[in-house]
Image (cartoon, rainbow, N blue to C red):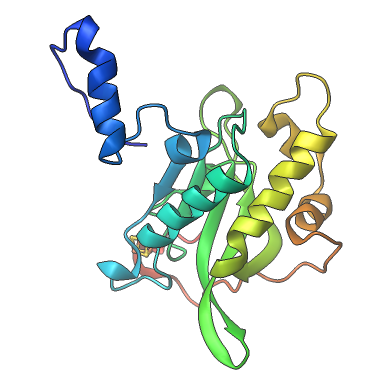
Length: 198
Ligand code: SF4
C-alpha cells in the first residue's frame, strides 16, 4: 500500500525504468494481492506481537500470486500481529489477526479471519467469522475463499458484494473447504494494551 514516486522521467524512458524497477523487486505492474497487502510490525520489532507478520505477508502474497494468477478484483488484505490492529484488519476485505494455535503439541503462529471490511462510500467493519488456522495454512484458505467467489459470483458482482451476500457460516465453509463450527476469537481477558480491542 506504499508508493514510491520517481519524477522527471522522460516518457520514452519510462518502460526502461519500469523494467529496472521490476528487476530489483519493486514491481510496477503489481498483482491485486501485492497492491492491497498491509502488514503491521509483528514480532520482529513489536514487543506486543503474537505473530511474525512482515515475512509472512511477503510469503502470503507470493503464494496467492502463484495460486490465483490474474485475480481480477481489488483486494485489501491486512495482516495484524495482535488485537491492537495496527494493520487495520477491521477495514480490510480479508483481515487476519495474529493468534497462537497448538499443532502436534507445539504452539505455532495462527490467524483468525475477519471478512468484508471497507472504507469510503460502503464503509463497514469486517465480520469476525469464526475461522482460525495455522499461518502455514492461510494461503490455501484464502485460495479456497477466492476461488469460491470466482466460481459462484453473479454477473458483475464484485468481491465486496459477494462477501456481504454470504453468511458467516458460508464464508467459513469456503475458507475451510467444508462446513465447520465457529471458534471463538480468543479475545483478551482484560483490556489489551492501548485499549483498542475490536
Ligand atoms: S498490531 Fe500488535 S503486533 Fe502489530 S504493531 Fe500493533 S501492537 Fe504490534
